[in-house]
Image (cartoon, rainbow, N blue to C red; front, side):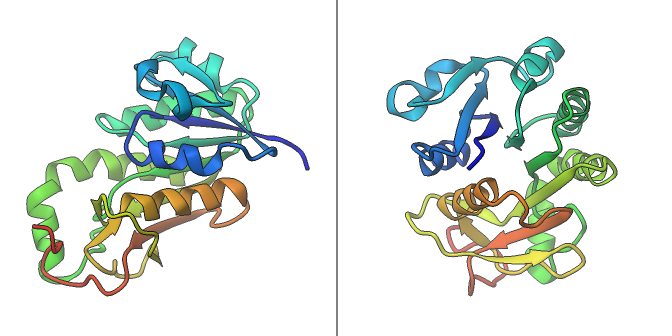
Length: 213
C-alpha cells in the first residue's frame, strides 16, 4: 500500500490532538504536524511524526510544509477565511488535492428551531468567517470535505451521525472524540465524502441548547 503523507494544520488543537493518536503507527500514513508551538506535541503526541513550527498565514512556512503532501487536514480558529485562501494557494502550488477542513454548524443557516436561534445568539459573530472559508473551499475544485460539528464535549465516547448540506442539522452536541474518529476515518479512506459539507452530531441530542448549558 502506498504511503499517504498527511499534513495536519493546527495540530495543537483539541480535536487534532485526538486525531493524531488514532493515526499513529499506521504504516500507510506519514504525519506532519504543523502548529505554532511545537511544545504542544512533545513526546508520545508526536511519535513517528514530523513536527513543524509555523503559521498558516506565513506563505514560506506553509509551502515548506505542504511540499510532497497528499492529504491536508485543517482545524483552525481565528481568521479562517484568510487562512483557507492561504491553504488553497499552497495546495494549488504543490498540486495537493485532498482537503479536510473543520468549520462550524450554522454556516448555511441550517440549524432549525430554537437551537438555531440560540446558536446564532452565541456564535453568530464567528459564523461569517467560517461561511466565507466554506464558500472559498467549495469553489476551489479541490477534493474537499467540510465538517460542521455540533457543540463540542469532552465525553470519552465515539457516537455520531452525519447530515449533508441542504438538510437540517440534527442534535445539539457531539464529543471531540467522535469528530476526531470521523476525521481519522476520512484520512484512512480519503475517497469518502469528497465534495461534501457534513454536519456531525451525537444522535438523540435534540433540544433548545446543548445539555451542558
